[in-house]
Length: 260
Length: 260
Image (tube, rainbow over all chains, first blue to last red; front, side):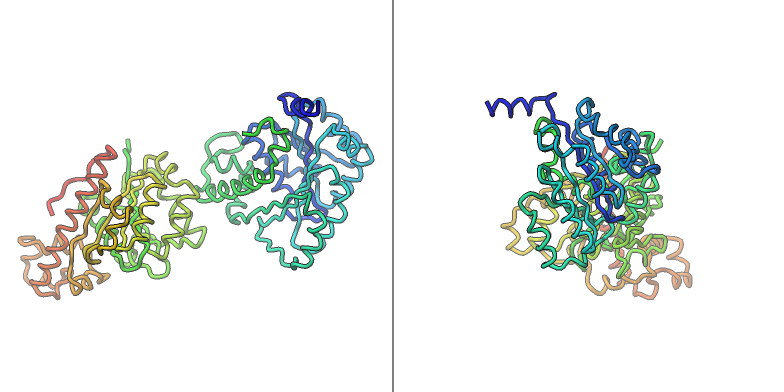
């Protein structure tokens, strides 16, 4: 019986909605960059994804992924409903929420208040937290705050080196102290450094990383980006996606239905 | 309408292999054929090709700008051939970039055919490396042996990659030159093409008494000049042979035949 239930769960069309929150309480650690790589990752695997950009009203994620991203203010009930009440009804089963700097703990608390984590516990939704850490010890102490919300979740600790961050404040003892607490239930993702000039050019182009790598502009027309910079972007994003693969992100998000 | 053009990448993993001399011979050959090859020198530490050809561009592959200058220019569609001198210092960076940016595909999309001219020392590791490069990149490849480096030792005869490269359909052998004349050829003021044209018996310049003093290597004895000429002519014939072989393999227009 349990076997059949598991089989039904994995059958196409029976995919459980998956919510992925990308966040950090500290600013400037590259949350949106990580969300962008994730949107490219799922698109590359033909998994329909929707994204919510909580950097209201500006919306950096929306700037790069206007077709799938929507700007919301998760402190507003109407926008909370727009995200959470549509999880079951939406055809798109993977939702990525890019939480603006400083709002991660608050967002998790608000989602507790509206019963989201109860629903996760009851198996209605799946939840993953991509916790993007910066180089300071303050970043590590955020782990204490978010751990209670990861009880029934997949917890991904993301060390983002994209801006050549070397995690200089992380001595081994401090690192071990925090990471021992969660070693059994966390995945560690390391985003490597991307060549500065390549990163800047993608910013200027305002297109997804994958689109830049394909030498296309935002209208899907042939662009004239540097071959070298495109190569850097492609190689870098491939390395990030390999880590998502290794961490089983695709399998988790699609219940293994789309796994190749 | 422009046909295919060649990007000749003269590469060597070792110092003092004759890499720059071979790049120089290719450049002189195309000049004598009426072309104006576009030249790149990748040795930013000890530039050589750019000293013989002031119009050659010196690019530093340790810098993103240098990488862009070279690899964004090489795939551009053009009638003129391009020649790159990749000495041992730039060798690893050059190939890792070439791989990461998928240079071969980009060049071919623009009707530019890369040709790797591989100049090894007679060492097993060099032949293994050359074999891996040939297999990995899958573009036109040429083994360039330099008689100045001596003969292959017996120990190489048990190395599979040695025989694999020796059996490659496009190979060239640079004729032997004695060390004294070799050092004369390293004189940066000497244009091999000019020397060959001016010192040919019966040429207008050679028959004009005092004006011979202004000729390249005019300070040498007739015997020494004759020895250099007798090395240079078969060397250029060898370059012509392999260029025409490559052009025939690629079904591109043949260079104007010269009688050296």
